[in-house]
Image 1 (cartoon, rainbow, N blue to C red):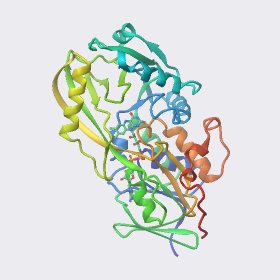
Image 2 (cartoon, rainbow, N blue to C red):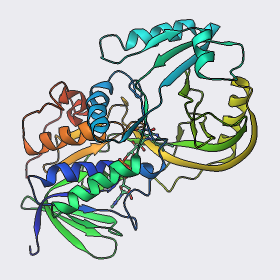
Image 3 (tube, protein in one colour):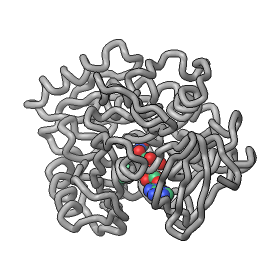
Image 4 (cartoon, rainbow, N blue to C red):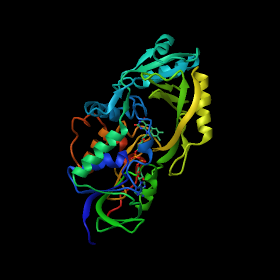
Length: 374
Ligand SMILES: Cc1cc2nc3c(=O)[nH]c(=O)nc-3n(C[C@H](O)[C@H](O)[C@H](O)COP(=O)(O)OP(=O)(O)OC[C@H]3O[C@@H](n4cnc5c(N)ncnc54)[C@H](O)[C@@H]3O)c2cc1C
């Protein structure tokens, strides 16, 4: 075998690939292979850009909270607040939501109609119950992605774009990584940060697919009357039927859709935009003047909806950094630090000390199976 043998080759340069590469590069020789012309074209470039303490459920909170401290200290967050809203019949669901976050460290507070009205104008009268999460903030997603790309470049990482990984073989403990255009890379370890393509890459490497399924999520930008106030909280249906937030006088609205999809360049469907608008009109009295823009992206979930970080227990040198679902931006700093510590065998530090890494290990999908050697 000839050519540079990297310690780690990372497939994908979205938020996951860029952040784990930047963390690994401080200790190892790293290359990043990205299929598209530029990093960030898929899910990372299509997010709704919020950091929300409860998003993804209690199992994600240990990653979100330390990431929040990192993001706040570096100026990537801009405060907004979030409000989960419900109707009278949703009382039990609201109670259960409050209970499920007890002891997790998130700060949430129950409000009634008055508190709701004070924060979100024009809500229809049947929306009477609310849970307020003051710490929720907008994330500068492009800024954070650039932070990691800059860091990895400064550390001498080879970042190759238009490098779609098409075949993977392993000989004498080294991966031979073939790209569609004929380029070849060598590495001792392969990190699967391929987002919606995580199971495709695993299959290529001879690893078992874990059932990391891409699901389409749609967002529409609306011009509404009166204009959406800048300080509007992120407003989420407690039953997962919609969320909206303001952006420069416009509203970003999602029907909270999770439509199963093949890994692809996702595009919004008219039906999902119409569904979002229909739901929105049942919730608020805002008048929609125009749908100015719409987009869709894929959120990819493991079967238990928790992310997957660490070595595949059956295929040596194959490492997972996938399944970031709808929280891959807001958890990126702590996830990347933790992922690198696992992959390099380093101890936890202040950012990761309170995280139980076993909750995110791929081993949870392989109970009772035996590792291959080689
Ligand atoms: C509409 C929407 C709203 C969202 N809102 C939020 C939010 O508010 N907050 C939040 O935290 N998260 C949010 N998310 C989720 C977040 O965007 C994702 O969790 C995150 O972007 C995942 O990053 P990633 O790097 O794993 O995936 P991606 O950004 O998709 O990157 C994967 C990369 O792998 C590359 N790749 C795949 N196969 C190959 C191959 N064979 N060879 C080389 N490269 C390959 C792809 O080209 C791609 O660039 C949202 C997602 C969507 C769709």
